[in-house]
Amino acid sequence: MADLKKRMECPSCGTMVPVEHALEGDYLLSSCRLCGLGLDVTRASRALKNQFQPAGDIHTSSAGMPAMRHTQSGSMAAVRPTQSGSMAAVRPSHTGSMRAMGAADSAERPPPVMSAPVKQMRKVHLVEDSDFLRQITRDLLNERQLAQEIAEAPDGQAFIEAYTRDVQHGEKPDLIVLDVRMPGIDGREAAYAIRAIETAMGARPTPILFFSAVLCDDEFKAQLRDLGNARYIRKSDGGDPNQLGNRVVSVLERLVGVRQQG
Figure 1 (spheres, one colour):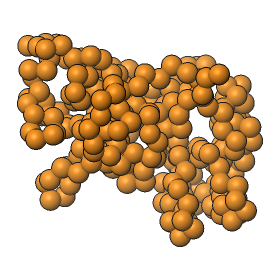
Figure 2 (cartoon, rainbow, N blue to C red):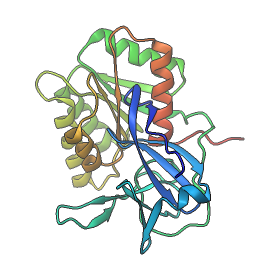
Figure 3 (cartoon, rainbow, N blue to C red):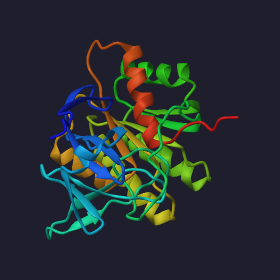
């Protein structure tokens, strides 16, 4: 039996995490079991393929790993159980990215490998109640040249008002960075409010990057999936800012895409 990695480093969780594996064509897709972030894509050996048993066009591992489907973009397409026990594909919000989301379809192309820098975003909304952490995040976005403009808000209510004004004026941001725990309206409540506003205005879901002090659990993982186009970063006290920056960039590659080259 071919060896499968049981633990890998997850840039979202910021630690070694248990890994789920799935087979898509000739490629083995590995993702974080805690948050669902795609971690690795490798060509599968014949011995490894033998560990996965096909069921129609859905492929599941003999170890009970989550099923995956092909997508037109070649990205990871997670097939998750529904309440009725059947399997349902999770639709992607950004094509060409290596994320555990995608529309079910066949593809000839292999999953892409992220190597280019993250594309620079025109405007980012940064929502954090701590002045210190808001400054650190702002500096990170500026130093990595990730945003041309950063709109800051100290709480969920101020953010929702600012976001609504932007959408009404045709200035919808490219990314929202949301702290999970805030007084009043917390990050998750604010995110659901934003999704409701986008639905009412016919706007596409803005990518959301949550900052959380704790590891992703099943409830938060389900909320990320429900919100769509959302990921998280576990922040840690006294951590290395450069390391945090590298993790943010790694997650944004999957969330907003990479910069087009020349």
